Length: 271
Image (cartoon, rainbow, N blue to C red; front, side):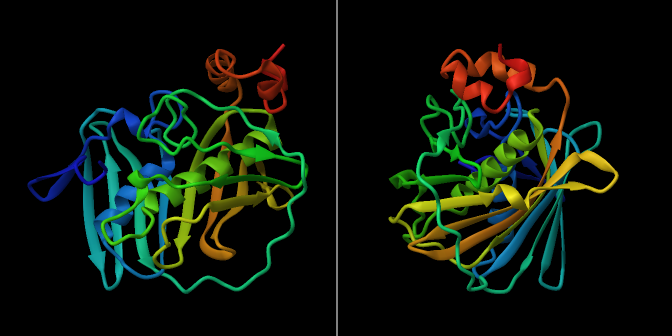
């Protein structure tokens, strides 16, 4: 579906994202936009896929992608009629570092789910339908891939990894601030071809979440994804808190979540 969303138009490409790729209401999931850049670059080995998000990316609207290449690096500029939405980049990267993972505790609290989100939406037939949880140590999820995320070569679709990592980063930021917002700087390293079949374990340590010096709206997070214990993707993702934005998000979540589940993340907006 990502590939079908792209068509050529003169020197540029036109991207029209289907609503199935929703993240926050009326906006594309950040991980799905990264997956577009990755698909266009077509790098098979380890690579870093990054995006600096200037504004939210609309769904169902034709957007232009300007693409340039210098040596082994491809850059992308996603724009609408009024300005730049995302600056993207895909470049080769080194293989995954062999580092241990901290053990998880039992008793994680479930995070809120939605209806339409590409990552966690219960009614999104083509989405991941992932269920994330948290405790005092981490945000994490164990996601079991469905056949729709198997590529023709038998590997796992990178869109699943970019979306899961982005989703975990959002909740790390929301838990730290009590606010909604958006992920604005995404740097995901895909450490080669990920195998399909085994569960994907995603984890982001809460102790690693750090506020930007001089501007505590911005919070940097570190997230990783493993399959059968091996690191298949790592990410450094920045969350920006937008005061008051949780009000609309909470209203929709309360329709399908237990209020206590929502209140644990957004206490100021859930009474």
